[in-house]
Image 1 (cartoon, rainbow, N blue to C red):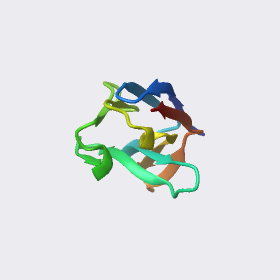
Image 2: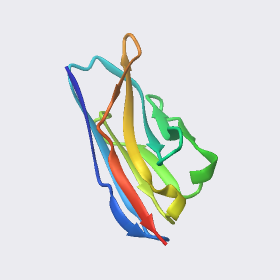
Image 3: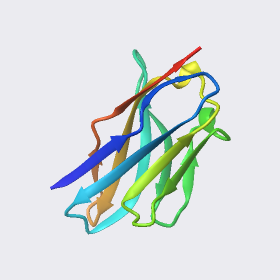
Image 4: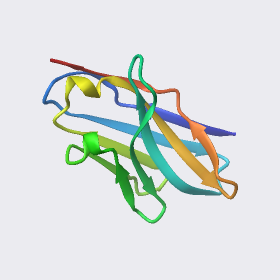
Length: 117
C-alpha cells in the first residue's frame, strides 16, 4: 500500500505565497520522480513542476520564476513553494509519484489553492 498525502493549500491574495507539501509513505522500493499537477474548473490537468531522483526539475512555462519544487531530506517528500501567485493559479493541486521498480504512479487526493484578485 502506498499513500500520497498533500497539505498546504488555501486562500491567498494575488501576489502572495503558499507552500505545498506532499509525503509518500507505505511500501516504497524507490522513487523515480515526484511532481505537482493542477486542474482548474473546465480545464485539463496540467503539469506544474516535477523533480526526479537525480534532482533535475521541470516547470510549466506559466510558473517558471515563481514556483520552486524541492525534495525533502528523506526524499519521500516534495514541496512546492509558490510565490507571486496569480488568480489564474487557482486550481486543485495534486501530487504524483512515480515509484520503482515498475514505474507505478500514485496520486494524492488534491489540495485546493485559491488566489483572489
